[in-house]
Image (cartoon, rainbow, N blue to C red):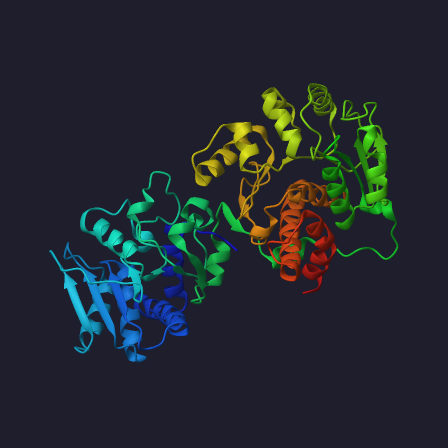
Amino acid sequence: MKILPSDKLRELDQATCERQNIDSLVLMERAATAVTSEIEERFLPSQRIVVVAGPGNNGGDALAVARQLYERGYHNLKVYLFNVGNQLSHDCDEERRALISNDAISFTEVQREFTPPTLGKSDVVVDGLFGAGCKGSLQGGFQALARLINESGAYVISIDVPSGLRGEHNLDANRRDMIHADLTLTFQLPRLSFFFEENAPVLGDIKILNINLDTQKIKETYTNYMLVEEKTIRTFLLPRMKFSGKRDYGSVLLFAGSTGMTGAAVLAARATIRSGAGLVTVHSGMQGINILQTAVPEAMFEPDRNEHFITDMTIHHEHQAVGVGPGIGTNERTINALEEMLKKATTPLVIDADALNCISKRPSLLNLLPPNTIITPHIGEFDRLFGEQKSSEARLQKAQEMAKYYNIIIVLKGHHTAIVRPVRPDGRVYFNSTGNPGMATAGAGDVLTGVISAFIAQGYRPEKAALIGVYIHGLAGDMAADELGEFGLTASDIAAYVGRAIRKVMCD
């Protein structure tokens, strides 16, 4: 699914009207009907509802919603239109005329000072002040109105986006001066601002309403941002050949584990096998041999010369993918081994966990990463590598810069894990749509390393393997949580469900 910027969404609205031979008011009524139906599903007609509308098309949506609610029996309704500049958009003015034609509706047009409504926890507020049309922070009376609504405890439904929040970038925004929604109802496609952690308290729950915008125009419109969906991953996954052997599905070498962290190697190896790799070899300190060969008998073990940690990352045999980092520690000799391996590496690499911490201790190693290396940092690892970031939006922008500069793929882990591609193949950012809070558990990242490595070994290019791996990893976590609950979810559970997640995607 594409994530379009506000200017492209306006072009999409216009194209829809032209290609469907409708005027913009018909499209506004369509959007209002979708919002009204959502409200009707949630609240009884006796519910007190206060609608606040601004002078633009977002306000027109809100006025249309108010009229439709009244027509459906919601008569405990108060509507405020803020027209302080006496400059309503054409469609907002038309919706105003339609609303005031019914003099039974409690309607106030605010052009100067007004007495604000008394709001309480039992009320519902429909926010149609500005939507994504807000160019900057709310000011003056609008700022005061936002704070009044936020402090009232009323249930807030925002149309398009909460007023004060921009559709894309909000680095300089003061979220205290935005309307904080409990439910955001947007249309057809998500907004970029929906994917940043700092905006979550403003957005509340999000629902995307289908209003039949022109699908051909959506296909034609280029964007740098995408939301990964199951149908996309399904087109990537290839069925297994009937006449095939284990070597047809690739060999993965994992540099993983050390004394006290051998479990990380176990998790990565299990996930690699569950994801379909034909052969898996774990290189670790000698102490890990009994644990690995007992816990994951399907994997081969390659002992390091050292008893407790890795001191040699020489690649002795042919492998189609190399995963580096789970539980390896940050001993100086391990860092040296990593540096020597990076200098000679020709096999696609997935670098995670302690390998990233090793690089943060010796930043010059970033310059040794081969093109299209995949790194999979969580927030802390990313900031150690590239400097502390003040927000998730700033962190994503930094990731885009670093992916381009080092020509690598950055899998920035989080609620909406972002797969950030370098300029080649396309410089795009893909947000993942699977996963749940139960996956915030020790070892989940080690499982992801194994999953991505396995798909590279099976012949998928790194950029596709990253998309597939992140999606399947999140889906496995969702399937495990459905059965076990989020609180009881472990990394071992995620690994155990990987095969079932792949089957679900291929068979649905």
